[in-house]
Amino acid sequence: MLAKPLTLKDALDRDAADPLASLRDLFELKPGTIFMDANSIGPMPKAVRQSASGLLDDWVALRRRGWSNRQWLDMPSKLGDALAPMLGAGPGEVVVCDSTTVNQFKAVSHCLAINASRGVILSQNGNFPTDVHVLQALVEASRGRLTLRFIDTEDEAVAAMDETVAVAALSHVDYRSGERWDMTRVTDAAHAKGILTVWDTSHSAGAVPVDLNGSQTDMAIGCGYKYLCTGPGGPAYMYARKEIADAVWPALAGWMGHADVFAFARDYAPHPGVKRFIAGTPAVAANELAAPLLDIWPRIEPSKLWARHKSLTDFLIALLEQECASLGVEVTSPRDHSRRGGNVSFRSPGAGSVVEALIDLGVVSSFRKPDAIRFGVSPLVISHQDIHEAVARLKRILAEETWKQPKYKKVSV
Image (tube, rainbow, N blue to C red; front, top):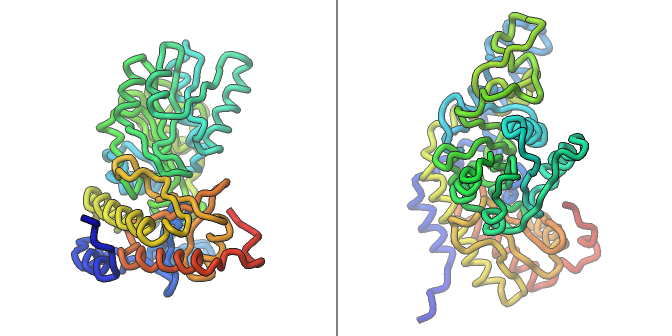
């Protein structure tokens, strides 16, 4: 028997039963716009405006005490502790600092120093380019000591683990297709051969389950400004398993990673644990934009947020296939939510132009070459009704071939 078609009533019924529906009230949303681009930047908490304004007032007044009241020195750790449950980590295991690129360098360098007798770095062909560029630079700087080996699939990664590999630097979720790898399976295979792991969780943390402690991964990094909402270009995060954090000095040592910051000692003494990786002065303004998250993330039970994301994206996939398959849409993300990251990707005729047309209809999404449209679903603010309306607008664009208009030929990324 054919499944009953999904309707707006189905969307409203699901929203009415959603225990996290009130989260939406904590964020500032633009009326009429459906923001399906949380894989690029997450929604802004309403409290950010007041927080930013207070920071600017202190700057104008040059109130030194204002900085102290804001606990600017401790913010990397405070924010890290607030985000930690969404990463499957504990207090004192995550810091918020720098960018994903810088943290990739710090994490991989740390693992290479621990496994100094080995010369291979393992990564995916489909890894995000900035992660790969960091690895390539490390290889180039090694003057022949290191080599970089690429694989394509999770099975290939498991099979490629051998005693020559020092570190496997991998993305938890493919940023194009949204495919999520089994972190525990791959990490277990790595550890069986004495390999350390660095996982980029940019496209999973804050949307789908991440379990750094349970998987025993060694180090992890990621963008704070996607599903975790640290703001435009906001600080990234870094995790280090306690058993290896203190094994060697950080490759990028700075005064904020010193065991006694205000000793102003000439000689470096690394702080115990993950705080040694903070390095330079915290980005005070960026951290202030992220500060309202200290009151948001701790009140959210991760399992409920992940369940909400599953419901939303399952509904999205079903609607895309129901309403748009006949118009050329093909879902490319895994149907199984346990293998899916934060975004749902699909192919469509004129994909880049379709994304431009969607913007004019109030649906913000993203395009990745050659033909991928990504709907990044933030479980903090997106509703099933939003999903229903977004697909309806997509269907209209495809059915009316609006995307073929000359104004949509110029495609942004």
